Structure formats: structure tokens, C-alpha cells
Image (cartoon, rainbow, N blue to C red):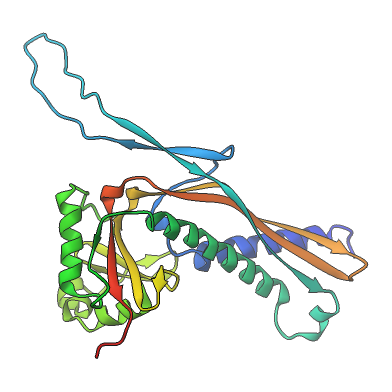
Length: 275
């Protein structure tokens, strides 16, 4: 047997982890402003204010907008997910243990990525609703009205992340499910099926903030939340003779922060079944 066979194993495993993380690990990373290759313990997202256009006299100096720049710092944290793969166990199972562990590690890190993004969203202060009703069309339109009032661009980069109960409530609305309103094609968000309605891409997520029956959902523009990555998902595999097993360690360094409070609206919904 070649002495480099372990390197082949490592490379295949790393490819499996990366693919699983990108396809099935995180739902929300592609819905926000993301910066990769960050060097250091933190990075800065620039929040730029509004500019004003003015006239000038012939041969005069072009007026300066004096844009207001508000840097928003995003701290990065290191996260790990590992597990053991016993050499003899691999001989006794009918599944590809390497792929199973790779997927499990990638999913764990993907859930952590989404958790960071949701925690950043949860610091927003604009809201509609009072947890007494489910997700209604009136609530949605009120949230959209706030975004429009704040001049949030309607450029196809508006997203909504909602819970399972709220998703089922949307499915009861003809405007949400009928091809007459939303067309036949549904967009994919990181490999997950989503819906496009009111210029918003709707994403189902199971890990939104909830207290008893009070559920927080969010409608936002992609530029309102920042996600920073210092290290993409990386895999380290080491053989431990005393255990006769490989230890497979997955790691990443990431963070998330709210950039623009005006671009995100919390929708307070009831998770309780209708009476």
C-alpha cells in the first residue's frame, strides 16, 4: 500500500466537508453581505450615508457629497466540530463512514454560521406585530412599508427568514402559492428551495428566536447584515494508534454583525395554532 494513501483520504474528506457545508450546511450566508479571507481577529464593514446631488456654476467646482462613513466592526470567533472514526468500525458498516462524519461536521458548522447571522439580526430594533397573531398579509405589508419608507432598495436582494409555522401560514395564502402571483420558478438559496413573493425571497429556517409561542421572523435587505470569514471550513485528520481510530476535526473562524438597522424589520408572530 502506498505510504501516501492517508493524504488521499484527507483530501477526499476535505472535499466532502466543503461540499456539504456549501450545499446543505448554511441557509443564510448567501442572503447577507459576506466577506471572506479576513486576516486578524476582526474586520470592518462600511456603512455609507446618503449623498445629495447639487448644481454647479459653469467652470465651478463640482460639489462634494461629504458622505458619512460609519465603520461597523465584526469580531471573528473560532469554532470546531470533531469526531472519532474507529478503523474496525469502518469494516462493519454498510455506509460510507467518512462521508457521514464529513456531512455531520459540515452541518454543525453550517448551523453555527446561521446562528451567528440570526444573533446579529436579533439586535435589530424595528418591528411589527405583538405576538398575538400569526404571520398575516397585513403584518408583511407593514414590514415592507417600513423598508420602503427607509428607502431600502427593492433590487431583488430583499429576504425574509421565517419559521415552520409561519411557512405553513404563507402556504394558505393564494398570493404566495399561486403561479398567477409568483410564477412557476422557485429560487434556490444554498441548495434549499425558497419562494419569491412581493420582491422578497422567503426562506424557511428552524432556528429563529422563540420564547414559548412568541416567534421572531425577519424581513431584511442583504446589505443590512454582515458576515465575515477568516477561515473557511477546514479539516484536520490524525491517526491515534492507542485508539486505533482517526480523529476528524473541522474548524472555521467566522462572525456576523448588524450593519444597518434601517434595513431589517423584526416580525413578531405567534407560533400557537389558530383557535
